[in-house]
Image (cartoon, rainbow over all chains, first blue to last red; front, side, top):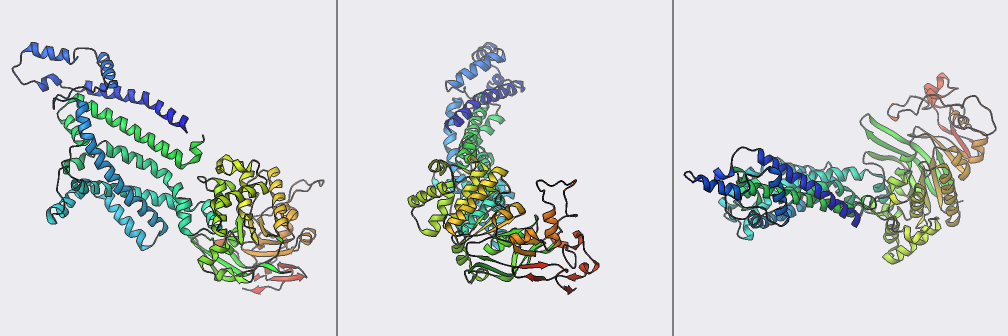
Length: 306
Length: 325
């Protein structure tokens, strides 16, 4: 198992370097000069030259790439033109908000999705199955901005129970987390249900029943773990998606998270910030995939002992 | 002698897209204490469905519509779910064809056996584990202590089937139903498993219903045989009588299609045609389209299962007048 984890981590290094290179290249071919963006008119040419020199914009790309990687390894991701702050500080400032939102949303998503899927599978074809699946479908189908606005209208405007936007107290977390959680619970529920139904057809379920186990024991003791294997992959992509910042939700609820600064970086052509957020997100995605692989190993002994 | 299981007129329907089929059509059979009874037939003749009906483990589309299954005097088919659960695994157990897919891939094999012990005997985890290791030794699993913690994919096919047999015999049931227990195994392993089953059966006096398409296995283990075709019993006889003098044309065809040592044949006999589709059975005798000696009467009369000697019955117009359609 340890060997498996270490090999997974080692594979990540070249992938990460490749991605940094790709981002670096893409941002370099984009038109526009960061210096002219930063400077107002009527600034002396020597000041501009000086700045270009300091930002190493006159160096060839591979030198800048090497310097960037070397700095990044030391934890220095550059300096944001727009915010006039260290990229690292900006990311670290936004990330905790994103993490809070992401985990609250995940708790709701899995908390609704997994039991919904199980119940729907066990009661396949019954009324409860249809009701639960319709509820999930609604979550998947309605766009997040729409659910978000709807929730704001009902809970904040009409009922006045929860704040519309901002991110200072726990109360602020409830609406955005529910919106994100519900919309992503549908996919989980449908996947759990589909896998559960598939697994319930297997011979070993019949064996479990032939031992005299009750249906609850069959479902939770034998079917659930086997049904969760493909769902884990989906959960991992959900984790990385949420951790990289839920752009729409963060915009609707005015949450200062990673999604917001990424969008800001794009609209302002803030290259260092954009590079920083993309690389940071890449690492997050790779880490959540790693965790999924490890979870896979725990769930499925056939992978663990390869 | 006292019979352990007495099935009377068991009929099971399965709803399919092509309409309702009847994989088990009025089957009656009895199993005596400590006896090994064989059910032989081609794939799709309903032998597995019959076993599943007895334990009420039919797929959702299946339904038992008629008959009785008296187990130690009580009708299984009239029992509620809870009563049925207390019978399954404890009093009647099952061994399935594919040991790989019949064991849960994500659960240690030892746990899959001890789970059953805990359920039925209220043993503690430690007691159940100890007993499971003991059972593994009894069914000839080497290094039983360590194998307790193995997962199914880490065991060979033969060992997996030993686990299944250990599971089936763990609680010394009165009856074990073995559905093609050796079909997925190599011939050498097959012999070992059959020997094991016979040995275990002798030791615990468990009755066995052995379902197979392999007449060789029947000859080796069973004392009485039922030949099943298209959901019905075609012939039933003590094993020696059946092999010595098969009465039904279908049984005769089956025996003729066995290769024999020391006998020169240009070509192995084959029963023409294939297993009938249960959704569109011919009227009259269900075997007649494939039968060498079928007459026009076979297409219009349904033969009954007639007694032809003290311990034998056959369903053929040779021995019965038949019922007009």
